[in-house]
Amino acid sequence: EIFSSVYKLSILAKEEGKLLEAFKKFVTIQINDQRSIYFELQRLLDDLEPTVSQSCQDPKYAENPINAFHLIGRFVYKWPVVFANILCEDCELDEAALHLNMTYQTVNGKIDYWPDDHDIKASAQALLRLRTFYYFNIDETINGVLFGEHCQPLNPSQILKLIRIATDSNMLHEARLWCEALLRKLPFSSYKDEHVNEVAILRLLATIYNKAGMHERAADILFPLHQLGHSEIDREYELYKNNVIETGEPHNIALVKDEYDSQYKQLCRENRKTPRELSELYCYLSNTSIPYYKGKLEIVNLQPVIYLFHDVISNNEAAYFRNEATKKFKRSVVLGDDGHGFSTDKERISQTAWLFDELEIVKRATLRVGLLTGLVTTWSPLYSNSEPFQIVNYGIGGMYHPHFDALLSDKRLQGVVEANEIQELKGTGDRIATWLYYLNDVEVGGATVFPNINTRVPVIKGAAAFWYNLLPRGDSDNRTLHAGCPVVIGSKWVGNKWIREAGQMFKRPCDLDL
Ligand SMILES: O=C(O)CCC(=O)C(=O)O
Ligand SMILES: [Fe+2]
Image 1 (cartoon, rainbow, N blue to C red):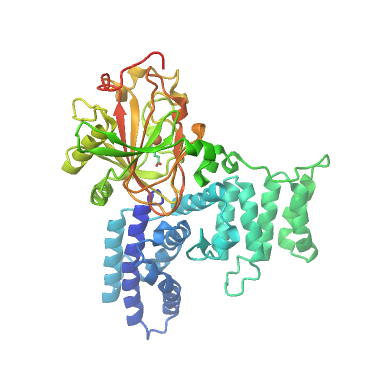
Image 2: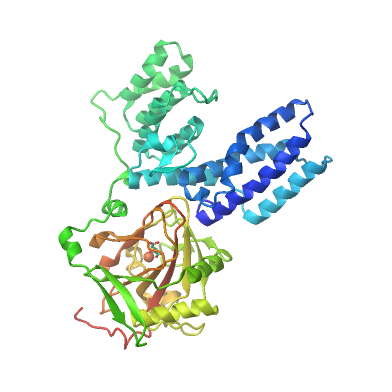
């Protein structure tokens, strides 16, 4: 899939420009051909050109989730129509068609995955989820403004698609809000699609209420259409009317779990520490074992202490990390429920790659983490005091739900498996501490938050968050539950280095009292 990395989407946006060029060339040559197929192709070109000629030049285009939704939509619904009309397996292709075919093949190879329905659904769900975190204004978004930033407006059929996906995903509260916003857009003066009209939208709104158990309301919505003689809705209308529960129905659509506003979501929106709590936080220069090398530290929470180290990776190094990672990307996984094996998870939408100390720049960064934290970070294939860097690029609305980094602390694992059963922990112990590099700036969203201790760490390029996952006595520290908030605009890159227990016995000795 492609939605799980904004980096991959950016490549898609750039490559689309090549498709447009080849398609344009093809259409220009056929300009005098009067067959109806060429009118159809000209129409497709007129539809694609204004957007694509700009989007392929804008490196930040795909960093906006609304644009990304458009981009994926073009690859799923529009480009296949272009190719189906021009390319054929057994027929003879003229020069322009051959060129288009070749471009198609190269682009296909470059993006290594052609977006499909799964990406449409996932990018729509990402948009819906983003709304439940950041409460952006739906009407504004439809008109092409998200968090004050301009993007492509959404057309009525895209909104209808979004509402259908919300309804299928049982996010009925969101579905209703988008549906009402679409009704406010009526009449669609410049948009012509016979399937998207007032009747279709009202029918969908009625479905939403019906699904929420509000059958009477659903019937009421269809009643005016019924009176006007829209016989196509009669069956639904009768059904809703017959389902009405006389003893009373809910007055509102209940929020589902995904729609609740949790402490986690609130922290994603803003720092929630009181002025008093904030006044106790401070910054200082820390010593390392090299006399002239100091750490620039900011304390962002006192107990347990969460550190933010500033200026600990240069722009060049960060670019090197990002670039090396793109060569090895895989969809992020999480440890399976039974503690064995790894699986992809809708709660971790990103692509990851591991960078080992074999690379000189990476090795230097590993050493630096050791110097700054005072822990032993050296890695070798035989014995590792820390894991290799795990580089992560998030996707549309990409996030990582609240979790613990310590492999054994996850509630799911407690009692299910013994520490020594996990191959991962043998000889190295658990993840005593986390070092989290921020490898770029994110325009909107993407903070790292700790819901149990009301702490929010903003993304700052070149900085790194650092904390202990384990208490000195070795048990996991439940206060370190943390999450990567959904990215609204931008492409978020982080680099994890998990430091293991083994090797730290003199650096951070065990202590039963703590
Ligand atoms: O992206 C973030 O801010 C958090 C990442 C994280 O917690 C992880 O990768 O384990
Ligand atoms: Fe984490």
